[in-house]
Length: 253
Image (cartoon, rainbow, N blue to C red; front, side, top):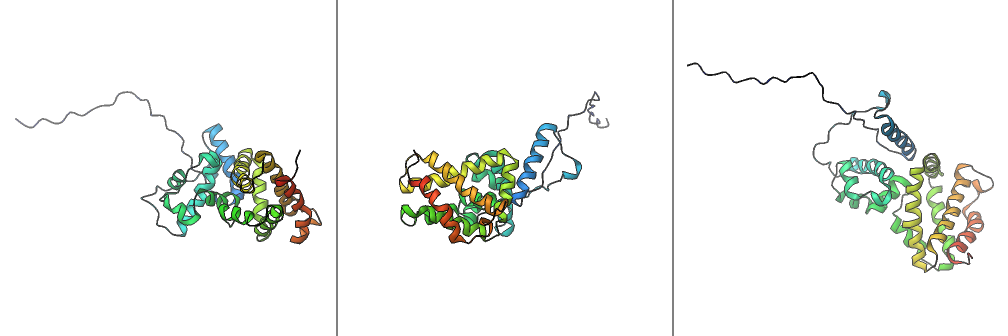
C-alpha cells in the first residue's frame, strides 16, 4: 500500500488576532528631552499610538553591551526614562540596567550607584551626591549656608546655567518631573545634610532651604534678573547664604 499522506489541518473562521500597537519612543539624551518623553508617554496612554513621525523602531538587543562609552550613554538614557516613569524610589538599578541592555554592575562602575546615576542623568550634576554631601558637611555647621551657595554655583556656573535652565523647563512643564526632583533633592540630599548637623524639623528645614537654592538658580539662570544674573560668587554668597543658614540651623518658629 502507498504511504498515507499526513492529514492537513484547516483553520476555520476569518477572525484575526487583535494586534497591539507597539510604540518605541526616542531615547532621552538631554534634560530638555524629559519634557518630550513625558508628552509622548501621555499620548501613548490616552490613544495607544503616536504619530508616525515620532514612531521609531528599536532593534532587538542581543546579549549585553560591552562596558564602554556606549554602555554609559545607554544607562543615562534608560535612567532618565525610568526615573520619570517610576520616581526615584521606584526605579531600581536592575530595572535601569535591564532597560539599557547592560549588566547592573555597570551602574556602580560608571556612576557609583543609583544616586550618582540620578545626579548625572536627571540633575546633570558632574558630581556624585555622596561627594556633594561630604563637601557640604566638611566644615563648621554655622557656615553650611555659605558652602551650599559656593558648591551649587560652582556646578551651575561651569555650564553657564544651561543645565539648570533645561531642568527647570522640564520641571515647570510636567508635574511628574517635579515630583522626582523634589523627592530626590529634599529626601535624599538635604535630609542627609540636616542629619549630619543634627538639626530638628528636617522636612520643613529642607523644604525652606530648597526654595532658596532653586530660587537662586531661577533668578540667575532662567529669568536672569540683574544684578544677580551677572554677580560674582562672593556677592551671591553674601546675599543668599544667610537665609539658607537660618533655614538649616536657625530659629524658624
